[in-house]
Image 1 (cartoon, helix red, strand yellow):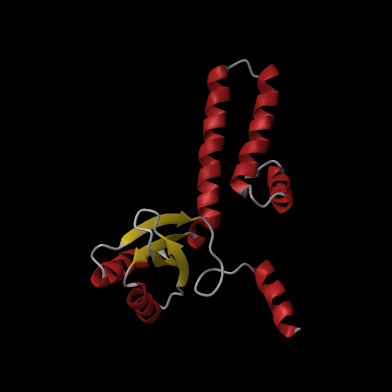
Image 2: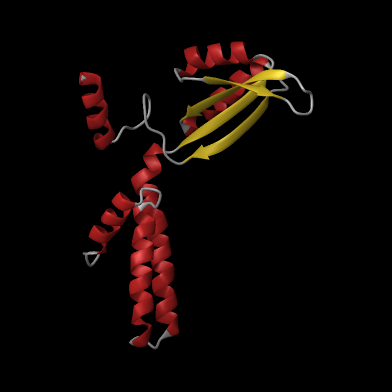
Length: 167
């Protein structure tokens, strides 16, 4: 099996523009190839099935490449931020960042907690927050890529970090 060399172009594209995943680079390059073949392929059905197949393979490839590195980013707004943060640190062994905020409705200053967790830790984190404050405002959002302590580090970043620590 071969990708016809588009894997090299996709890797170079990803190196040049890191914001576009490798799977999406495959989709862009291979779609351009299919579209340029319109002059030779008169069968519209084959053309559309080729584009749909590319879309699906791009999504699967992105999931396989970065799937293990996805996480959830949780924001918690509560009057019991200190207690919640302390239990997250001890029970989940996750770092927590406190961000000073002002409620625009209540005009009161509060602390918002931000924490990146793996998906399997999500329910426990939510239970911790609600145990200390039934009225806690919890926002969950996907984090496409998380690196650092407790999460996957890529070799390129590890080499840079080691050089920085050695200095």
